[in-house]
Structures are given as C-alpha cells and as structure tokens.
Image (cartoon, rainbow, N blue to C red; front, side, top):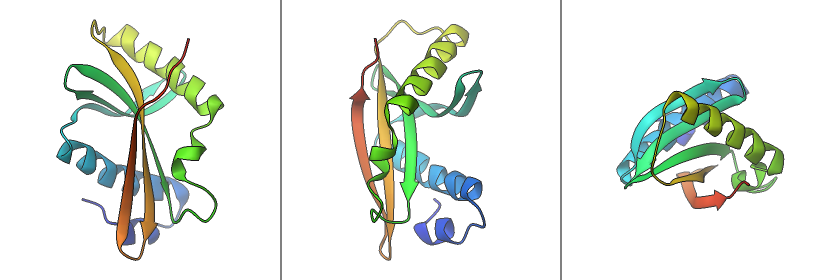
Amino acid sequence: MATYSEFSRQPHTHARGRSAEVAAIAWLEGHGYRIRARNHETAAGEIDAVALDGDTLCFIEIKARDSDEFGSPLAAVNRHKQLRLGRAAALYLLEEPWEGPCRFDVLGLTGSAEGWRYELVENAFELP
C-alpha cells in the first residue's frame, strides 16, 4: 500500500494522485469493496474506481490532500465534478450493463505526519 510519505515525495500532481489512489484502493478492499475497475476512462472523463459494496455498484471519486489547511478533500467534489462523474458513470453502464442499485461514493485522504486519514462518504450525492 502506498504511504503518505510516498505521496508527499512525488514530483508532480499526477504522480501524487496515482500514489494516493493505490492507498485508497487498498483501504477500500480492506473495508469489503470488490474493485471492478480502476481509472476507467470514458468520453466524459475518468472514474477513479468502480466497485461492488455488497450488491451495490459504486462509482468512487478519490481525493487526496497534504492537509486540510485549504479545506477537506471531500469539499473538492463540487457540483461540476459530480455531474462529470455522473456522465462518466452513465457511459460505463452502457459498456457494462448493471441491473442492481448504484451509488456515488467519495473517499477523501488527508495526509499528516502520522499517515493517511481516510473519510468515506457513501451515497455522497444523487443526480437526476
């Protein structure tokens, strides 16, 4: 699992994001999520993770921050980001049909000297 210290040593934002996603995926798996896809690309954008939580298909946005000095990583998932994720999820479902329930989760990682602090919001938002 990627640690916060590995994240903080990365040379640029993209590499830092990928490092945090490794830690996030391991955390999700440790909490019972069954990962179906990572970094799934669609014409509407990327879905960080698609996973099963029981019989619910979850589209998961992962956000990481060095600290909460400039706000929670969860706050970065604004309405624009939610709509983009919704469009990407709709395209995913065209490729991979699913008959069961779906939801949008957001996993925030905040770094500190002690390591990552994880905050998961299940069913973080709904879209029309």
